Amino acid sequence: MQHSMRALALIQYIIIRFFKCWDEGVSLLPNIKELIIVAGPSCAGKSYFIRQLKAGNRGIGSALGIDDPAAWTFLNYRDYWSHSNAYQSKVVLHYDFYGLFKNGEFRRLKELVEINDSVKIVTLCVPSRLLFKRAILRVPKEILSLFKVRVRNMSIRTRVYNQALKIYQYGNKGQVSTLYSLWFKQIEELGVVRDWLFDSRSGVKPEILDARSIDYKLLVE
Image 1 (cartoon, rainbow, N blue to C red):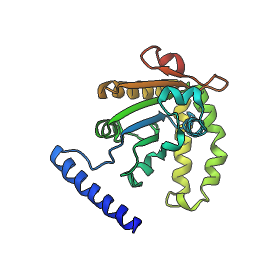
Image 2: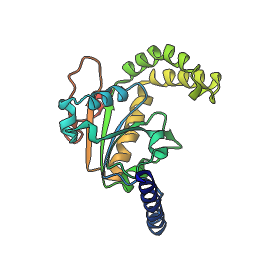
Image 3: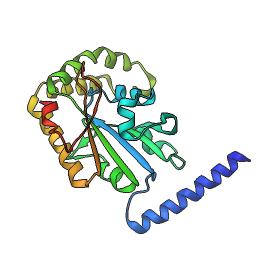
């Protein structure tokens, strides 16, 4: 009985959202009350940062308003669109802006900011030399992942090429700086109210920094 009620509620939610979005001319996306986007290029330490939030790290959780991690849902970018978010009011989203930068824009970032009630963005800042080192150290992990069922739809050649391209681009300080510059430019254009920085270099005390009080270039160059 309980499952039937939840199913009916979900159907009702989808119908209401569909006609609301149709009328407003926007995409049919989950409407989250509080969305925190943890962003950065691949190898920036987003997964580690999120694990710290889940574990209840007060140093970073309190600044973001996460007092009770159990009340939050933690999702990857792909899961966000496939997950049933009708009942999720608080979401932390893993956003790899290296892999999601296509044709001069960051995939669906504008929709994420515009459709949800409250959006905070935490950008993990890492200099190119450290990203380069981390990308090389991740090669064995990438090779092992080739044997997992969930990535068999991608050819070995494609996986190897993507990782090699990433290492090459991370070795170019200018390309990494440009990627960060484009990211912060789009955040500013979207008018995100709360924009935080996180110094993701090794050996640095975990601390959330107000993006308006420090120049991100000091952390990524």
